[in-house]
Structure formats: C-alpha cells, structure tokens
Image (tube, rainbow, N blue to C red; front, side, top):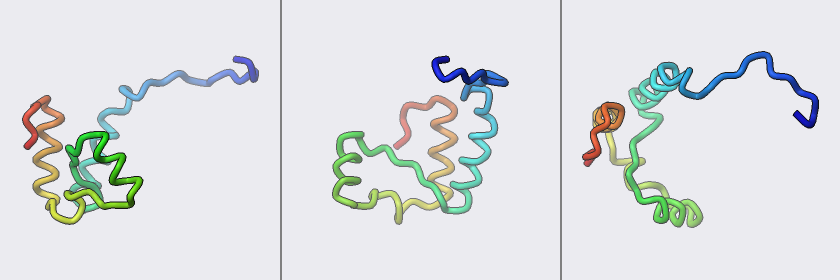
Length: 79
C-alpha cells in the first residue's frame, strides 16, 4: 500500500458470520437490539429528526428473535 502497511492476515466479514450471529442473538435476547424493516429513506428522515423507530419500544425480544431467525433462513416475508 501507499503507506507501507503490510497486513498480517487478510480476513473477510464472512469468516465471522457465526460470531456476528451469536452477538446479534445475545443482544436481541437481552432486549438490546430489535429488527426494523423501515424503508431506508424513512429511516434516514427519522434519524435526522431524532425520532425513535416504531419498533424500538414496542417489539419484544421474542418477536425480534423470531424475525431474526426468519431473516437468517432467507425468508423474504418478515412481517
């Protein structure tokens, strides 16, 4: 590279999917994360206006986990 930095190891995010999934399940199970299917444009607008997602305070960890598992299974119907 231009800065003369030589990486020790080259890795890919896909190398860590299992670990990432484990952390996501931990966060969802402890009520620290939720699933949100808000369209990108609306989400961006809400963030700029500092409006919480409608799912943040209404979705239970069980509902979020069920949606997470559907997403991981490739189910396009996550409603």
